[in-house]
Amino acid sequence: MDAARQKIMLVDDNKANLIMGKEMLKEHYEVFPVPSAAKLFEVLKQVNPSLILLDVMMPEMDGYEAIKVLKADNDWNEIPVIFLTSRNDEQSELVGLSLGAIDYVYKPFSGPLLLQRIANQLLITSQKKELKNYNDNLQEMVNKKTGEVLDLQNAILSTIAEMVEFRDGLTGGHVSRTQKYLKLLVDKLLEIKVYHIELESWDINFLLQSAQLHDVGKISISDAILNKPGRLTEEEFEAMKKHVTSGVAAIEKIASMTPEHAFLNHASTFAGTHHEKFDGSGYPKGLKGLEIPLEGRLMAIADVYDALISKRPYKDPMPPEVAKKIIIEGRGSHFDPALVDVFELVCDSFADIARTENDNMTF
Image (cartoon, rainbow, N blue to C red; front, side):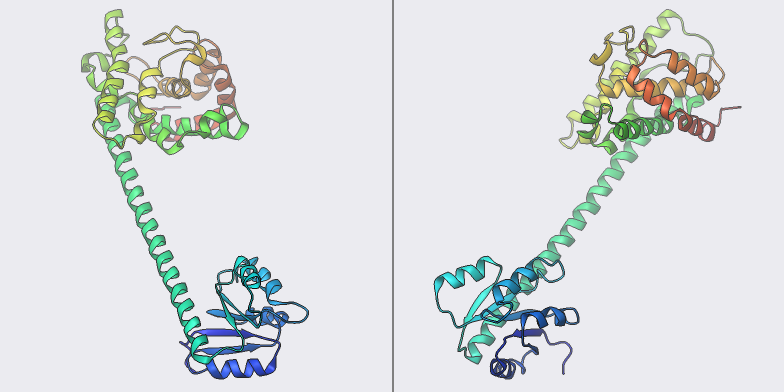
């Protein structure tokens, strides 16, 4: 028997119908005669048919009951079912079709008619499978292309961030570390349900990508100020503060030039608010408390912590224990108290990142 031939199950409690049906079909299909619905489910464990011809009127379990079981099982619910029946009434046909049958064939049936009905349904089933495969492959291609676009976007953001860091050489790795600090904070916030409603409305991947641009405005600051080996004068500090507004302007200009700027959704907020302070003494707008967007309140902790543990032209790096103490002391003044509480839960992981990923640390 040709193994490539499609398999048909013929379920009927009448032995004569099984014999006649097999004779009609055996030239074209591999036929499995089954004498009852109960036996059908036993055979289905061994054979995966292309189609089931199912008698309606059978003792113990009729065809309607049998198709309900078939459609409720994930392994069998895609197998097409054609009902065989001697009931030639509209209501019976409607019941069968509503239960998931794809066609009705009335007894006594002719061989050519039965073969054509089967061929039609197998063709439809085959076309459905081809369409599903096409859609699955198309979705896979879309997902792949989307991934490539996201990778490209992230590469662009990383490159821009690295250009900024290159000018401020002693803080190399700052962008990467602050991203990791942010992820620690965000993951813990989601875990313990703090600010989780707002966070759950965000695409966290876009959030972390956008965080790379929080200091992009430093590219407009002169080297003399950026790398001054000492404290800035008041005038110089005012000039340094402009990196916030310069960063926002640069990001908004990029976003205005393309409709596909979702990956920048949080970037201007990070850039524009990470130097605001919870008590309103920060810059550039002097926002206070929850007026400061959550992105800015999160980045404030990540940014200050990394500045403390990093070498600067005007200072040596501080140990993580000291940085932790300063962050905690800033609760309610510099930092959101709720976020400081979360920072305390993950500060050991902050310290691990600081020690393993900061070449300028000497402790």
